[in-house]
Image (cartoon, rainbow, N blue to C red; front, side, top):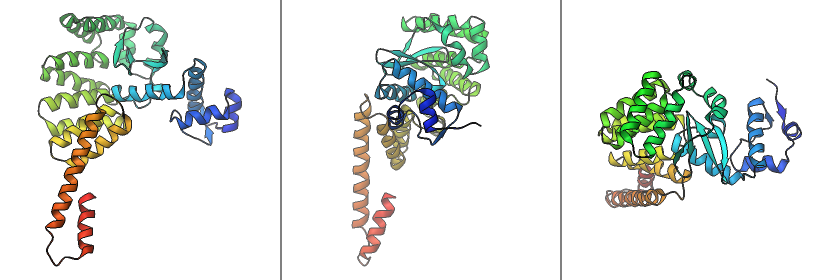
Length: 314
């Protein structure tokens, strides 16, 4: 495969060394000594966004938010991006997502994004678009936003009759049932979505949520862990997994996922709760270490006491 040096990339794309280094510092592209065609495509996209006055920090915030709400590992290059008011919105799986505001948007120009988005998706979604199911999907989203849940359910059911393997419809219908407390129905739909697209982290995350409501904690944890294997920076999955481990009394595992959540979301609406839980867990661990140290046999050496503390914090 042809590779290009950093100097070649600067020349081919007509970007400056400072631009490239800025994107690398922001974590938008990995630092390489040589680049293939895939990396050149990514850099072209970043150049295009910057030409539309998108700052690297704004791009990064949108990307991190999209990872958190969707589970997509690389939102810039696994979906179609659209600048909107200083941030990015993303077209993926037949929907328009504003991850900063956590909103689904109506896409007035779906046909312009379909080829790129669906090329990264599955065959059934392409068939759904070609058969007119895409329009039904947007109508269902509008019905949901208007609070017309019965109509939305009917529309999603009709979509799934026409295209049984349309993962976005499975998830959206499952979510309506979930919020209505029909957890068994939601579980069936989420599980179908994981079978249709095993790499869809959001489906595994939603499955974990409903299994938690059904008090099937081990299965719930497995679903969250699958979501994180697919998308390690999925902030909401770290948050829910931390809570699940706390409920099982596995404090150290919970602590690790609270840390991971705060690494990804330092100022979101749930970050303060995560910090509070971390403080509580660290306090409990400190008390436990102190208690164990005080209950050592009198003849034990200071070295043995130190080893006990190290073992407790390992």
